[in-house]
Image 1 (cartoon, one colour):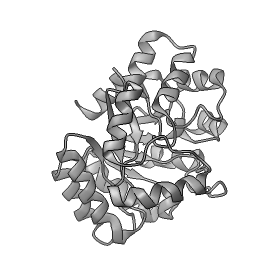
Image 2 (cartoon, one colour):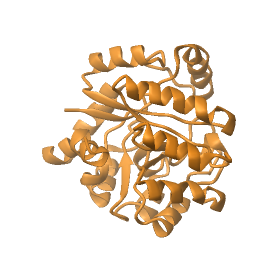
Image 3 (tube, helix red, strand yellow):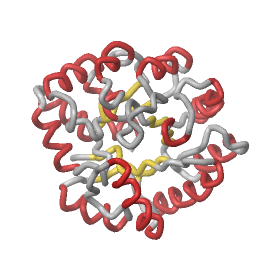
Length: 264
């Protein structure tokens, strides 16, 4: 069984505009059209059994609409994380709303949302998620569209491990895209509630180093992900299969860890 823990889906009309703009900014070629139907079709082709949609509210004004769509996806049988903006005045109420609606957690993207991951102004979000027992998936490391933005570096992420040890956190891109030496130094192997996903890493990480990083952190806290539509899940899965890890650990990464974390 394979669960892709990191994919993005947009409302059909939004996808028509968003996918070309994001593709141009990141210099990436999308493998889906960004719609739910497009994602479902391609996932069947890629041999992926299920996937987790991660939403991002890039500003306070759009937060409610983003979560309305996330709830719609959930009601259509999908696994979905909502999102809040740290500086939205009604952030606590919105977190309660999406929790009651059955969303599985939230996604935060410090680069897109304009805050440092260890910014004290964002701490109320972490406190609310801890109280509601909602996992947070963070973009981590460099963003290819904004390569000079340092809002989500591993050293700053480590502050959250210290200040919120009982908050479940998933750091995407193996803990920090393209800054994996810092992941080894500051994050790997620390915190029972800290997970990494494997999305969009095989472009720039050496397989031997990836296996070393996973061994240090623990394969039982690594989640398979692709960042689809920006990476093919089939290619992402082939990269994990190529790593020098035991088959039982790969099985954990591909599905067992996600099933345990999400309680499904």
